[in-house]
Amino acid sequence: MVMSPELDRVRELRDRAAAARHLARICFKTGPPTYTGVELEWTVHDAVDPARPVDAERLRAALGPYSPTTLNPTSPALRLLHGGAVTVEPGGQVEISTPPRASLAALIEATQSDIDQVARLLGAAGLRLGRTGIDPYRPPGALLDTPRYRAMRLAFDRRGPAGRTMMYATAGLQVCLDAGEPGQVAARWAVVHMIGPPLLAAFATSDRHAGRDTGWASARMGAWLRIDPARTAAVWDPGRPDQDPVAAWTAYVLAAPLLCVRDPDGDWTAPPGVTFADWLDGALPRPPTIDDLDYHASTLFPPVRPRGYLELRYLDAQPGRDWTLPLAVLAALLADAATVESAVAVAAPVADRWQSAARHGLGDPALASAAAALFDLARAALPRLDLPAELHDDIDRGLRRRRAAARRRQG
Image (cartoon, rainbow, N blue to C red; front, side, top):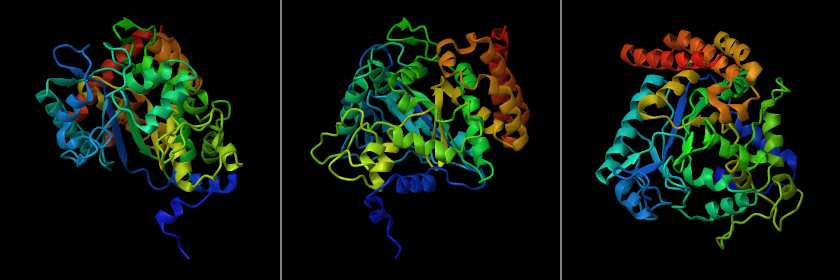
């Protein structure tokens, strides 16, 4: 008998082996690397006084029928003209998630059109999108309150204020790439981690928060790193470069503490310190289900998260159209096996420098040197992306500008 997807999701998990089999089946879907997707977040500001708080009603009115149901429970939550879905983060940050596309040019064109649509909606209400990875004007403040966000806040507060900063004041750029054919997965998994620190450094935009210098090039990533390493540290280990991605992710998921446990009464508070493995071993009154495991995985935030595809979470939001630059760099660096191999050689010596990348950015000479070399590789591979001439030239100019900045800092 074949179980329906709906029944499968409520099926109880009785042991770690069953959980591992499920994670292996859904988290690294293999096939030709064809599609690219992008998710963009922005802080939202009053167009005249960017330090003025924006309340939920004003944002709801601005987004109208495109509001997510977390902001307006009766909203139809329409998709944007080119298919992007609008969501709102707990601090009022607006996010657009685009359908993946096989053509990078088509992805950029559709995404920019959806961005322009949201910008027009906000502009008509006297609002504008932010330009950096953390709110440069305002301290963290809650705009949405849901059972998930309440449970998150309580869990993060046990470790200090970084969780609230992340939830209410940060904005990132996420790039989504196919995991690849079975023989490619390990190499693609490794390289997207290895190039993370130099690209984080090169595209850091969050040095000012709440009206002051933070001392971090990427205060956004600095907040993530201070939340809970069991939930936000990288899964891939530079000390074990040949590790199996599926085994590494399974171990990470099972060892991570529960962030919340969904309950019909609305209190999703998780018991402190209980991991998903503990839940499988009987730590809670009922056994977990497949759906509980999937939900738990959605509460883990490493720099690279496998979701069937590879979700790269380490980049700050970029100003204006500059979001296309890291997207193009990542697509170009993974365009073929030879470029992947070259990128690994460049980035391997700095693959563990997440903390330095967030703190110092291109002020770390080794990261600056690696970033410049990665830009060279990306520019050489750019023609393989089959971009229209004008878009190719725009991106190439942007990469030359970023490369020059990295070269100036490498010492």
